Image (cartoon, one colour):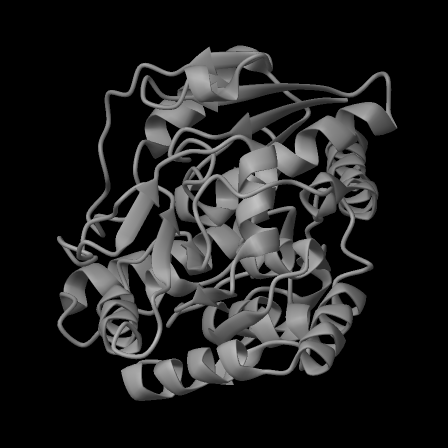
Length: 357
Protein backbone atom coordinates (compact mmCIF):
# COMPACT_ATOMS: atom_id res chain seq x y z
CA UNK A 1 0.00 0.00 0.00
CA UNK A 2 1.28 3.44 -0.96
CA UNK A 3 0.30 6.38 1.23
CA UNK A 4 1.00 10.06 0.69
CA UNK A 5 1.23 12.03 3.94
CA UNK A 6 0.47 15.72 3.77
CA UNK A 7 3.03 17.46 6.01
CA UNK A 8 3.19 20.76 4.14
CA UNK A 9 1.99 22.90 7.03
CA UNK A 10 3.58 20.96 9.89
CA UNK A 11 6.26 22.82 11.84
CA UNK A 12 9.53 21.05 12.69
CA UNK A 13 9.70 18.70 15.70
CA UNK A 14 8.63 20.23 19.03
CA UNK A 15 6.49 22.54 16.94
CA UNK A 16 3.04 20.96 17.22
CA UNK A 17 1.02 17.94 18.22
CA UNK A 18 0.41 17.18 14.53
CA UNK A 19 4.16 16.92 13.94
CA UNK A 20 4.56 14.68 16.98
CA UNK A 21 1.76 12.46 15.69
CA UNK A 22 3.36 11.98 12.26
CA UNK A 23 6.86 11.51 13.70
CA UNK A 24 5.68 8.83 16.12
CA UNK A 25 3.25 7.04 13.81
CA UNK A 26 5.10 6.60 10.52
CA UNK A 27 8.07 4.47 11.66
CA UNK A 28 5.70 2.03 13.33
CA UNK A 29 3.41 1.91 10.31
CA UNK A 30 6.39 1.05 8.15
CA UNK A 31 7.55 -1.60 10.61
CA UNK A 32 4.11 -3.25 10.67
CA UNK A 33 4.09 -4.10 6.94
CA UNK A 34 7.12 -4.54 4.70
CA UNK A 35 4.99 -3.59 1.67
CA UNK A 36 3.87 -0.31 3.23
CA UNK A 37 5.30 2.72 1.43
CA UNK A 38 4.80 6.39 2.16
CA UNK A 39 6.04 9.71 0.91
CA UNK A 40 5.76 12.99 2.79
CA UNK A 41 4.67 16.19 1.08
CA UNK A 42 6.80 18.88 2.70
CA UNK A 43 7.48 22.60 2.36
CA UNK A 44 10.80 24.44 2.04
CA UNK A 45 10.49 25.37 5.73
CA UNK A 46 10.18 21.82 7.10
CA UNK A 47 11.70 19.63 4.35
CA UNK A 48 15.03 19.01 6.13
CA UNK A 49 13.34 18.36 9.48
CA UNK A 50 11.67 15.21 8.10
CA UNK A 51 14.87 13.59 6.84
CA UNK A 52 15.64 10.75 6.19
CA UNK A 53 12.09 9.77 5.21
CA UNK A 54 11.02 9.75 1.57
CA UNK A 55 9.65 13.19 0.90
CA UNK A 56 8.78 15.62 -1.86
CA UNK A 57 9.13 19.36 -1.39
CA UNK A 58 6.00 20.94 -2.86
CA UNK A 59 6.35 24.18 -4.75
CA UNK A 60 3.56 26.15 -3.13
CA UNK A 61 1.76 28.44 -5.54
CA UNK A 62 -1.68 28.83 -4.03
CA UNK A 63 -2.12 30.43 -0.62
CA UNK A 64 -5.01 30.19 1.86
CA UNK A 65 -8.61 30.21 0.69
CA UNK A 66 -11.26 32.76 1.65
CA UNK A 67 -11.33 31.52 5.23
CA UNK A 68 -7.64 32.24 5.65
CA UNK A 69 -7.23 28.85 7.34
CA UNK A 70 -7.03 26.40 4.45
CA UNK A 71 -3.63 26.78 2.79
CA UNK A 72 -2.19 25.17 -0.33
CA UNK A 73 -5.03 22.76 -1.08
CA UNK A 74 -4.59 23.04 -4.86
CA UNK A 75 -0.87 22.40 -4.51
CA UNK A 76 -1.68 19.27 -2.50
CA UNK A 77 -4.19 18.11 -5.10
CA UNK A 78 -1.58 18.53 -7.83
CA UNK A 79 1.07 16.60 -5.89
CA UNK A 80 -1.34 13.74 -5.16
CA UNK A 81 -2.27 13.50 -8.84
CA UNK A 82 1.41 13.24 -9.75
CA UNK A 83 2.34 10.57 -7.18
CA UNK A 84 -0.86 8.46 -7.43
CA UNK A 85 -0.93 6.91 -3.93
CA UNK A 86 -3.60 4.50 -2.71
CA UNK A 87 -4.56 6.87 0.12
CA UNK A 88 -3.87 10.45 1.19
CA UNK A 89 -3.34 10.92 4.95
CA UNK A 90 -3.73 14.57 5.89
CA UNK A 91 -4.48 16.85 8.85
CA UNK A 92 -8.02 18.17 8.81
CA UNK A 93 -6.82 21.77 8.76
CA UNK A 94 -5.09 21.21 5.40
CA UNK A 95 -7.34 18.72 3.60
CA UNK A 96 -7.68 19.27 -0.16
CA UNK A 97 -11.07 20.28 -1.48
CA UNK A 98 -10.85 17.55 -4.13
CA UNK A 99 -8.67 14.47 -4.38
CA UNK A 100 -8.28 11.66 -6.90
CA UNK A 101 -7.70 9.10 -4.10
CA UNK A 102 -9.41 8.28 -0.78
CA UNK A 103 -8.64 10.83 1.94
CA UNK A 104 -8.10 9.85 5.57
CA UNK A 105 -8.08 12.84 7.90
CA UNK A 106 -6.61 13.18 11.33
CA UNK A 107 -7.77 15.76 13.83
CA UNK A 108 -6.05 16.12 17.20
CA UNK A 109 -8.40 18.90 18.27
CA UNK A 110 -10.79 21.46 16.82
CA UNK A 111 -9.22 24.61 18.26
CA UNK A 112 -8.60 26.17 14.83
CA UNK A 113 -12.35 26.53 14.34
CA UNK A 114 -13.31 27.59 17.83
CA UNK A 115 -12.33 31.19 17.45
CA UNK A 116 -12.81 34.11 19.87
CA UNK A 117 -15.59 36.60 19.29
CA UNK A 118 -13.16 39.04 17.68
CA UNK A 119 -12.47 36.59 14.83
CA UNK A 120 -14.03 37.82 11.60
CA UNK A 121 -17.40 36.14 11.28
CA UNK A 122 -17.09 35.69 7.52
CA UNK A 123 -13.77 33.85 7.83
CA UNK A 124 -15.05 31.73 10.69
CA UNK A 125 -18.12 30.62 8.76
CA UNK A 126 -16.04 29.88 5.65
CA UNK A 127 -13.62 27.77 7.69
CA UNK A 128 -16.41 25.84 9.40
CA UNK A 129 -18.05 25.18 6.05
CA UNK A 130 -14.80 23.74 4.71
CA UNK A 131 -14.47 21.50 7.78
CA UNK A 132 -17.94 20.10 7.16
CA UNK A 133 -17.12 19.53 3.49
CA UNK A 134 -13.87 17.77 4.36
CA UNK A 135 -15.59 15.53 6.93
CA UNK A 136 -18.36 14.66 4.48
CA UNK A 137 -15.98 13.63 1.69
CA UNK A 138 -13.37 11.83 3.81
CA UNK A 139 -13.08 8.05 3.72
CA UNK A 140 -12.28 8.14 7.44
CA UNK A 141 -11.29 10.51 10.25
CA UNK A 142 -8.80 9.64 12.98
CA UNK A 143 -9.75 11.14 16.36
CA UNK A 144 -7.56 10.67 19.47
CA UNK A 145 -10.18 11.26 22.13
CA UNK A 146 -13.86 11.57 22.94
CA UNK A 147 -13.68 15.38 23.02
CA UNK A 148 -12.61 15.53 19.36
CA UNK A 149 -15.01 12.77 18.31
CA UNK A 150 -17.92 14.58 19.95
CA UNK A 151 -16.93 17.87 18.31
CA UNK A 152 -16.77 16.27 14.87
CA UNK A 153 -20.17 14.66 15.33
CA UNK A 154 -22.06 17.54 16.93
CA UNK A 155 -20.28 20.53 15.44
CA UNK A 156 -19.45 19.42 11.91
CA UNK A 157 -21.86 16.62 11.05
CA UNK A 158 -19.23 13.93 10.56
CA UNK A 159 -20.70 10.46 10.07
CA UNK A 160 -20.27 8.28 13.14
CA UNK A 161 -19.11 5.27 11.13
CA UNK A 162 -16.29 7.29 9.56
CA UNK A 163 -14.69 8.39 12.82
CA UNK A 164 -12.04 5.98 14.06
CA UNK A 165 -10.81 6.21 17.65
CA UNK A 166 -7.03 6.11 17.37
CA UNK A 167 -5.08 7.09 20.46
CA UNK A 168 -1.54 8.36 19.99
CA UNK A 169 1.52 6.76 21.55
CA UNK A 170 4.34 7.73 23.87
CA UNK A 171 7.96 6.87 23.15
CA UNK A 172 9.16 4.70 26.08
CA UNK A 173 12.63 6.25 25.79
CA UNK A 174 11.25 9.38 27.46
CA UNK A 175 11.25 7.40 30.75
CA UNK A 176 14.88 6.27 30.45
CA UNK A 177 17.01 7.89 33.15
CA UNK A 178 18.55 11.15 31.95
CA UNK A 179 20.19 14.15 33.58
CA UNK A 180 18.84 17.70 33.33
CA UNK A 181 20.65 20.20 31.15
CA UNK A 182 19.74 23.12 33.44
CA UNK A 183 20.30 23.74 37.12
CA UNK A 184 17.54 22.76 39.52
CA UNK A 185 15.03 23.78 40.75
CA UNK A 186 12.91 24.63 37.71
CA UNK A 187 9.41 24.46 36.27
CA UNK A 188 9.01 23.11 32.76
CA UNK A 189 6.58 24.03 29.99
CA UNK A 190 6.61 22.81 26.38
CA UNK A 191 4.40 23.59 23.41
CA UNK A 192 2.77 26.67 21.94
CA UNK A 193 2.04 29.49 24.39
CA UNK A 194 0.00 31.80 22.19
CA UNK A 195 -2.95 31.22 24.52
CA UNK A 196 -2.56 31.52 28.29
CA UNK A 197 1.14 32.35 28.04
CA UNK A 198 0.36 35.59 29.85
CA UNK A 199 -1.32 33.61 32.62
CA UNK A 200 1.77 31.42 33.02
CA UNK A 201 4.03 34.48 33.11
CA UNK A 202 1.89 36.14 35.78
CA UNK A 203 1.81 32.97 37.89
CA UNK A 204 5.57 32.47 37.61
CA UNK A 205 6.36 36.07 38.56
CA UNK A 206 4.17 35.71 41.64
CA UNK A 207 5.80 32.38 42.49
CA UNK A 208 9.27 33.95 42.42
CA UNK A 209 8.35 35.92 45.54
CA UNK A 210 8.32 32.60 47.44
CA UNK A 211 10.38 30.12 45.37
CA UNK A 212 13.53 30.50 43.23
CA UNK A 213 12.38 28.17 40.43
CA UNK A 214 13.49 29.02 36.90
CA UNK A 215 10.85 28.66 34.18
CA UNK A 216 12.16 26.48 31.33
CA UNK A 217 10.30 26.77 28.01
CA UNK A 218 10.75 24.19 25.24
CA UNK A 219 9.62 24.96 21.70
CA UNK A 220 9.71 27.88 19.31
CA UNK A 221 8.27 31.22 20.33
CA UNK A 222 4.83 31.75 18.80
CA UNK A 223 2.93 34.85 17.85
CA UNK A 224 0.69 35.96 20.68
CA UNK A 225 2.81 34.78 23.60
CA UNK A 226 4.57 37.23 25.96
CA UNK A 227 7.47 39.03 24.28
CA UNK A 228 9.57 38.97 27.45
CA UNK A 229 9.48 36.10 29.94
CA UNK A 230 11.84 37.87 32.32
CA UNK A 231 15.36 37.10 33.58
CA UNK A 232 14.28 33.90 35.40
CA UNK A 233 13.20 32.06 32.26
CA UNK A 234 15.16 29.96 29.75
CA UNK A 235 14.05 28.84 26.29
CA UNK A 236 15.19 25.90 24.14
CA UNK A 237 13.73 25.84 20.65
CA UNK A 238 14.78 22.23 20.09
CA UNK A 239 16.37 19.55 22.25
CA UNK A 240 17.55 15.97 21.71
CA UNK A 241 15.12 13.44 23.15
CA UNK A 242 17.53 12.51 25.96
CA UNK A 243 17.80 16.13 27.14
CA UNK A 244 14.04 16.64 26.94
CA UNK A 245 13.63 13.47 29.01
CA UNK A 246 16.04 14.88 31.60
CA UNK A 247 13.95 18.05 31.90
CA UNK A 248 10.73 16.09 32.32
CA UNK A 249 12.28 13.81 34.93
CA UNK A 250 13.88 16.51 37.08
CA UNK A 251 11.42 19.42 36.88
CA UNK A 252 9.67 20.39 40.09
CA UNK A 253 6.47 20.47 38.04
CA UNK A 254 5.45 20.35 34.39
CA UNK A 255 3.04 23.24 33.81
CA UNK A 256 0.80 23.08 30.75
CA UNK A 257 -1.39 26.19 30.41
CA UNK A 258 -3.56 25.07 27.46
CA UNK A 259 -6.87 26.92 27.16
CA UNK A 260 -8.09 25.25 23.97
CA UNK A 261 -8.46 21.74 22.54
CA UNK A 262 -5.38 19.60 22.82
CA UNK A 263 -4.72 15.91 22.39
CA UNK A 264 -2.36 15.97 25.37
CA UNK A 265 0.91 14.77 23.79
CA UNK A 266 3.14 16.76 26.12
CA UNK A 267 1.04 15.76 29.13
CA UNK A 268 1.45 12.06 28.29
CA UNK A 269 5.21 12.44 27.82
CA UNK A 270 5.57 14.27 31.12
CA UNK A 271 3.58 11.61 33.00
CA UNK A 272 5.59 8.81 31.37
CA UNK A 273 8.82 10.49 32.48
CA UNK A 274 7.59 10.79 36.05
CA UNK A 275 6.79 14.50 36.21
CA UNK A 276 4.12 16.03 38.41
CA UNK A 277 1.75 17.80 36.01
CA UNK A 278 -0.12 21.04 36.59
CA UNK A 279 -2.70 21.73 33.89
CA UNK A 280 -6.36 22.49 33.11
CA UNK A 281 -9.19 20.12 32.12
CA UNK A 282 -9.07 21.11 28.48
CA UNK A 283 -9.76 19.05 25.37
CA UNK A 284 -8.55 15.49 25.80
CA UNK A 285 -6.22 16.11 28.74
CA UNK A 286 -8.42 14.52 31.40
CA UNK A 287 -9.01 11.50 29.12
CA UNK A 288 -5.25 11.01 28.85
CA UNK A 289 -4.18 11.82 32.39
CA UNK A 290 -7.15 10.95 34.59
CA UNK A 291 -6.82 12.34 38.12
CA UNK A 292 -3.00 12.28 38.18
CA UNK A 293 -2.44 16.01 37.43
CA UNK A 294 -3.17 18.97 39.66
CA UNK A 295 -5.89 20.81 37.73
CA UNK A 296 -6.34 24.58 37.73
CA UNK A 297 -9.16 26.69 36.29
CA UNK A 298 -8.28 27.55 32.68
CA UNK A 299 -7.52 31.24 32.25
CA UNK A 300 -6.91 31.91 35.95
CA UNK A 301 -3.38 32.90 37.02
CA UNK A 302 -4.31 32.65 40.71
CA UNK A 303 -5.67 29.13 40.26
CA UNK A 304 -2.56 28.08 38.33
CA UNK A 305 -0.32 29.59 41.01
CA UNK A 306 -2.25 27.74 43.72
CA UNK A 307 -1.76 24.39 42.00
CA UNK A 308 1.96 25.03 41.36
CA UNK A 309 2.40 25.85 45.05
CA UNK A 310 0.61 22.64 45.96
CA UNK A 311 2.89 20.63 43.64
CA UNK A 312 5.97 22.13 45.29
CA UNK A 313 4.67 21.51 48.81
CA UNK A 314 3.53 17.92 48.47
CA UNK A 315 5.24 15.40 50.71
CA UNK A 316 7.51 12.87 49.01
CA UNK A 317 5.13 9.95 49.55
CA UNK A 318 2.17 11.86 48.11
CA UNK A 319 4.26 13.01 45.16
CA UNK A 320 5.31 9.42 44.40
CA UNK A 321 1.68 8.27 44.50
CA UNK A 322 0.83 10.99 41.98
CA UNK A 323 3.71 9.94 39.71
CA UNK A 324 2.62 6.28 39.84
CA UNK A 325 -0.95 7.28 39.01
CA UNK A 326 0.28 9.27 36.02
CA UNK A 327 2.30 6.40 34.62
CA UNK A 328 -0.62 4.03 35.09
CA UNK A 329 -2.95 6.43 33.26
CA UNK A 330 -0.86 6.46 30.08
CA UNK A 331 0.37 2.85 30.17
CA UNK A 332 -1.75 1.87 27.16
CA UNK A 333 -0.51 4.68 24.92
CA UNK A 334 1.90 2.98 22.54
CA UNK A 335 2.80 3.79 18.96
CA UNK A 336 2.42 0.11 18.12
CA UNK A 337 -1.30 0.17 18.93
CA UNK A 338 -1.69 3.53 17.21
CA UNK A 339 -0.01 2.20 14.05
CA UNK A 340 -2.07 -1.01 14.07
CA UNK A 341 -5.38 0.87 14.19
CA UNK A 342 -4.27 3.47 11.66
CA UNK A 343 -3.11 0.75 9.27
CA UNK A 344 -6.54 -0.88 9.45
CA UNK A 345 -8.22 2.42 8.59
CA UNK A 346 -5.86 3.14 5.68
CA UNK A 347 -6.14 -0.40 4.31
CA UNK A 348 -9.94 -0.30 4.49
CA UNK A 349 -10.04 3.05 2.65
CA UNK A 350 -7.74 1.74 -0.10
CA UNK A 351 -9.72 -1.51 -0.44
CA UNK A 352 -13.01 0.35 -0.85
CA UNK A 353 -11.49 2.44 -3.62
CA UNK A 354 -10.26 -0.65 -5.47
CA UNK A 355 -13.71 -2.26 -5.10
CA UNK A 356 -15.38 0.76 -6.70
CA UNK A 357 -13.07 0.47 -9.68
